[in-house]
Length: 118
Image (cartoon, rainbow, N blue to C red; front, side, top):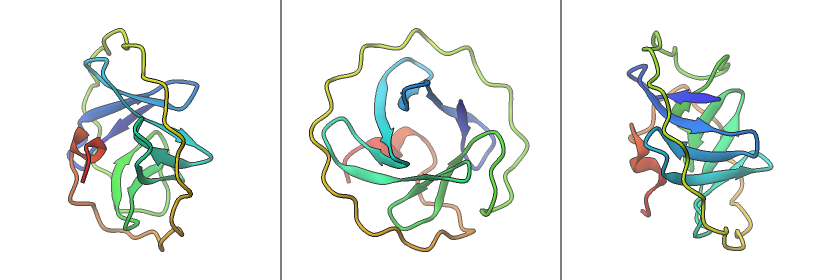
């Protein structure tokens, strides 16, 4: 599945195992039980109703048929993704915080900077 940012640009590609990659093939993180983590074990947010949401509940990226968020822009044509690199072995993830109320506001994160340590 491809995820797009608030400008309609394809930013993240997810495989069938819930692993998230940049279009350059770099491993970014993974999804387990709708919770998004880095490979270092840091909690980043949630996958909910076709939206990747940050830890404050704001919309970061949207997938095919998102519901319950801001109005997504028209998608631009996605580039052909590079062959993904082997992702690292994930650290033991912490218990995620309680989910916030999900908002109809866009997050401050626009691109793969969402996956970098904060």
